[in-house]
Length: 313
Image 1 (cartoon, rainbow, N blue to C red):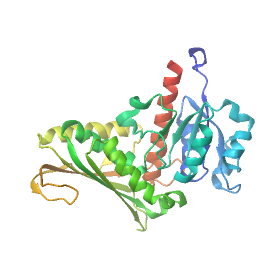
Image 2: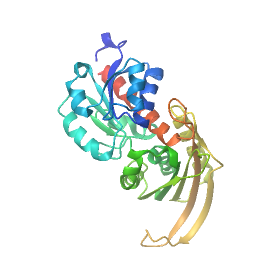
Image 3: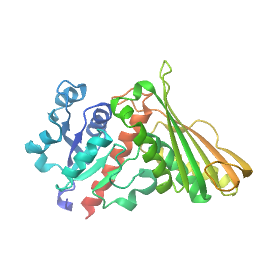
Image 4: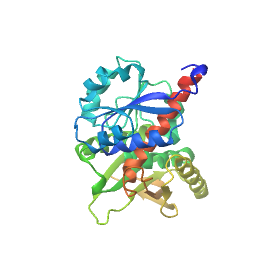
């Protein structure tokens, strides 16, 4: 895109007409100043997402990526979001790499580099396929990275608790990929020497808002440095996920000769615990589904940044 075209919105497609794809569609069409959704792709012609897309004037296909490639709209597509599953994205990525499109992967496939908007957007602005990690990763890795910036994190563990009702077929089919992808991203993006991720599907009624717990073992520093770093990072995430917040004050305690089975020797330093809550914006999903909302919000923020870099180029 050159400067003379800077007032023209980038044409985008979303593959996946489930909860995440539909919520992302509404966010793009109502919030984005630089992206316009041209096509929503599904595999179920009767899905609510495809029906909503048609009502909004968005072209649709129920023939998956094959249908997308056959549509005349595809010729103008510069940006493709994949909101399907890890297995499906493996196939989609192999096809899309033969086309000049930017791919934003919302599945745990992790073919491209992990991107967490408040941490490392700038590092991968030229990558053609970027991965949004997982909902738990988007919520907690900013905190691990903030702590690691002021005190080396030897071990980072996160527990993502989400309402069972907000876990659709795609989420349930990717539980193993969730834990593996998130654990790796805690290390690669968050900076922890060792990362561990746990997901809990909470069946409580009424459904509870997404909650995340971050535990870090880190080097001993002045506690106020950690508190300040976490507070700043929370504000950064809130700029694109308004419902993201600390549930209580950061807990910091010194530990000496702590024996943890993941270490080969005893650990001494600080144990830091951060409790978070993520409330959704309610664009399509219930407000308790912050786990899905943070994924679509992070994906949109990433896409807008990527497209702004294309425009400058």
